[in-house]
Image (cartoon, rainbow, N blue to C red; front, side, top):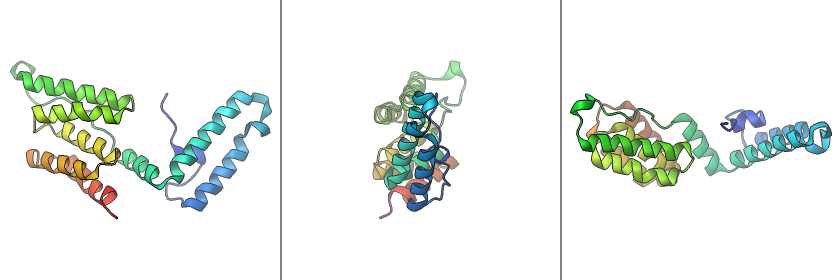
Length: 179
């Protein structure tokens, strides 16, 4: 089951500042705290844990920035290179296979382990825009903005018309490369 949006859990606005987040946290904890809702202690405990986790994420500026960035820029799923299947070479098929391996790691929330499969897909097929996009996104989310920019710049060299690569490169530069 996917995790709920931390802003929804706290009942907070996406633009809430630290004081507003804290007020939402206190209000929500009062609503769900197990000591105040003893009729179903297990459910109350689970809700309280969810509220604490949401507050921890959103009260950490770096974690919040990464969460918000990932929400705005989801991983691309379009891992099939254009062309007829019968005419695709082994490197294209292997690039698609490695892309799917990377996506499996993303779904398992193992971003660090997704880097190598995406990197292999780009190495096999430099014009594989979805692989370059996902490699750049994973690198940025892992805190390696300079590498992400390099990957996205190279991806744009090979796929100059890909608007997703352009938008992601601009967002990485403004989000992760500013002082």
